[in-house]
Length: 345
Ligand code: X2X
Image (cartoon, rainbow, N blue to C red):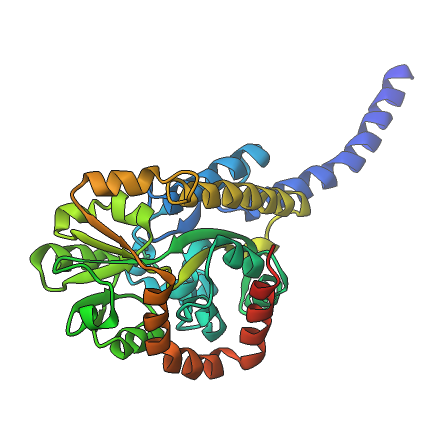
């Protein structure tokens, strides 16, 4: 009798636990063996370090349930950065750490950060990404098949060239400058009298080394890690005209396929990795720590830092571009950004 009781109890227990096990197994089966994370740059660039760290933290926080592989060089879209956002929406890419510049052809509001001389410093950039403007942009992205999780940073884009130091717009006259992504950049450099050419980052390096283009603009961390001084870029001007943040996102369907617990783990991992990445991208280029600038000077690069008056000449020359693109981005959003910047601490 005792064994029959035990048998019945066993059956009852099995009836309770089997469906739970089956449900658990079904959830696990929905998970992909690998999630594809797209970035333009890999390690040792801060951007790639940030992507890699996100993957590492996700693995840790989900007990290995979510396994991410990073694909730098925007290799999932054959290196064409401007197609990354579309591929992300379509699900060819599961997740990304992407630049606002590269996504701006599809999300015109992201051109905000490329308005010339909108943001004077890192605090201004933070006032946007960490405030209402950042929230508005995340809400907008959320309507476009992605789940935005955190703001990272590519950084202030300083201009370099192989010809001569740039101190005035006249110094840029006729110079062939490689630009990326949005047509806004073509307008900006045309307004300055330069001769801009749009091309991917992958094409930019050979174009610089052969002299097909004279110059480019990118954050200093990229200038150093890509060894642009060895590609003839011996003149660098710190003009602080635009800064591009990075955005950590996941495709919406991929997101929906995860348990609540795993979603929160991925979000927390993105927030942490992004904060670390922002700190790395600012390292060595501040008043307190200018070690990266010293390294650049040691590479034989002539570094020019514009005075506020010199900078004003570039701002005046690009004001029509600012005004034209404000209409495209949305005057309300630009006004909100300007107010947030004016109120920054
Ligand atoms: O292509 C560039 O210049 C880069 C790497 O900075 C971006 O992807 C925006």
